[in-house]
Image (cartoon, rainbow, N blue to C red):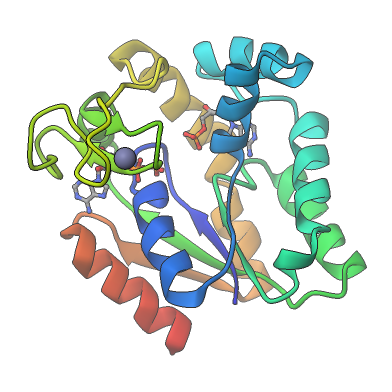
Length: 214
Ligand code: ADP
Ligand code: AMP
Ligand code: ZN
């Protein structure tokens, strides 16, 4: 299963990725998570990424393509993978096609989680994360059992630095300009399917699984 999850920021890619990788036992490759890990470690990559992320802009293509190329070459990707948040530009999509061909892997299936713009700011601003296990919650739509605390491990939940209303406006603009054209790219490749991301989390998972097991 070689999957890529598309959709605007806050659409539910990370949430759905967690359910899908469990169902197929494949690695979850999130470029956003990779950049956040680099920021936490304080590496050169982290420093470069942080400036872009804080501004709600994209990390340059050559940097992002490089880290994905390295990750996909690892053995655990042979049986499949789920890309979350990559590609985000047509240049990245072209590069991914080349990488997949070079590695002799099957073409990726592109699944687009469709959520209207007006819902996305509320989703991002209310997002809460557990740094320990990676679980994602929402204060209103997917609250933990005890407020501010992870269900899995009792860790205090935190908020992403870029989940502000202001940064979201920039991220949504970037999505419209640079990422939305990927819909036509993957339609032309004949591997594009959209699902309705306004439904409850479990129903979205069910629809995605239906497409994948189709
Ligand atoms: P993305 O990875 O696409 O940025 P996330 O999976 O982190 O999005 O989801 C963004 C926020 O929206 C999170 O707080 C998450 O709990 C919430 N969310 C995810 N899916 C749904 C849904 N189907 N309905 C309502 N809220 C959702
Ligand atoms: P995400 O966790 O997917 O919402 O990504 C958070 C931030 O990381 C984005 O706003 C970008 O700054 C950066 N980022 C993640 N994935 C990419 C990508 N494929 N290309 C460029 N920048 C990215
Ligand atoms: Zn946790």
